[in-house]
Image 1: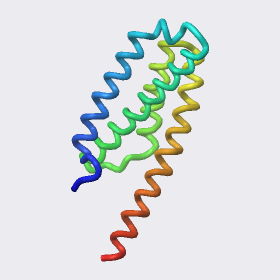
Image 2 (image 1 turned 135 degrees about the vertical axis):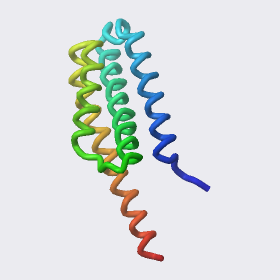
Image 3 (image 1 turned 90 degrees about the vertical axis):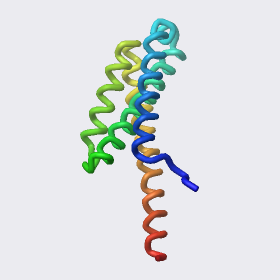
Image 4 (image 1 turned 45 degrees about the vertical axis):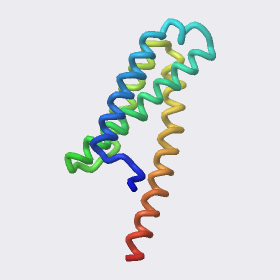
Length: 124
């Protein structure tokens, strides 16, 4: 039984999610800029763009055999901030804050998964 998607299928799923989130955000950017709460929601949706783009880049680099570093994080954040800037100026700030929180959680999750894999490999 497989518990996780492979890098190829995960890369494909994250690319489609990137396109879908970006399209919906651009379709409703007038609504997202209409009130404070929707502006925060616009920043959050842009941070989701950051997350799925980072997943796409990481999986692409994994399939190519290249190690993922901070360059992928900076590129994904830049794209997300540009997408946020098309909605509202405040979306840029909220996108950055939500993206930092998501990056922290992904890093924590990655660390816990790595220790699980290392502990399983030591048993054998």
